[in-house]
Amino acid sequence: MPIPSDNPMTVEGVELGRYLFYEKKLSGDNSMSCASCHHAEAAFSDPNQFSTGITGAVGTRNSMALINLGWQQFFFWDGRAATLEAQLLEPVPNPIEMNQSWSDAVEKLRTDDRYPEMFAKAFGEYGIDSVKVTKALAQFLRTMISAESKFDVMYKYQNGLQLTAKEQQIYSSVTIEEWAGYDLFLSLNGADCLHCHNGPLMQVQKYSNNGLDASFTDPGRMEVTGNGTDNGKFKVPTLRNIAYSAPYMHDGRFATLDEVIDHYSSGIIQSETIDPMIEFAHMGGVQLDDQEKQLLKAFLLCLSDENFIQDPRFSNPH
Image (cartoon, rainbow, N blue to C red):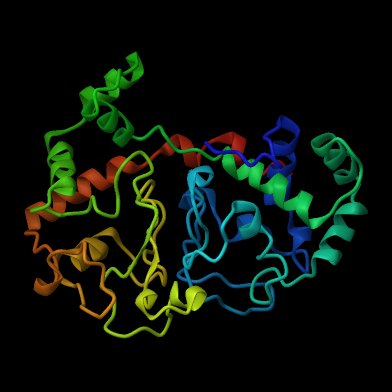
């Protein structure tokens, strides 16, 4: 994992970040923390289509799952933040999220019994500011690694990597249907998912228009670049823990995995910026039959990492 030279990982920094992730004083009325929109049981995403801020204002994009962020190359659905630390500066002052100035948030932390000493231990000096808050949060988020799903064992086996004794047991439990679903997932003439979702991260670091609409009320990446070729393109998310992180797509329009599979099978809508890697767009999708849909779903469920969502190291320490 690439770690920024100006924010090395420390035990104290990670612990501080964990406290801050669940700290409601970061919001204007002390009612909301990062965890309010990133629930552990939902793979640290929001089970609501859109998140509601402290004023009752509602966002326009679904809260992304927080998984393996240390390997991400850009952040937010539109990629407007280049680093995790930069991303973390935004939610506190955002009027439709936590709606509080950083100066007010920092003052609350300064007058708290616990935080001045925790910051001193984490950064080797006294003093609290927004940069240190985001650095500590980033350290904690970088520890949130998901790598213990059935898929991990399948991936290691497929790539000739040695399995541990425990992984051998898991490997022996993989069903014929799950392997068939994996084959479909990778097949150019099957579900054809690998162009956007592959490798250990189960995502390709790019932006894509995946055929949701003919025209776009949310321009996505174009809002950042001003480039018309980016219209309707959004960051490709990881498929890890996909069974936990409904609803799906940048706008949370699909409530179930079945709806997602149906979209790629027969619901693709063509537009000028559609991803050329969606090779069957002219047919509306890859045209899976019912059995193929069930096999693909069986594989997608292999991406669930129960240990990740139940990890006590990521739970509320307050």
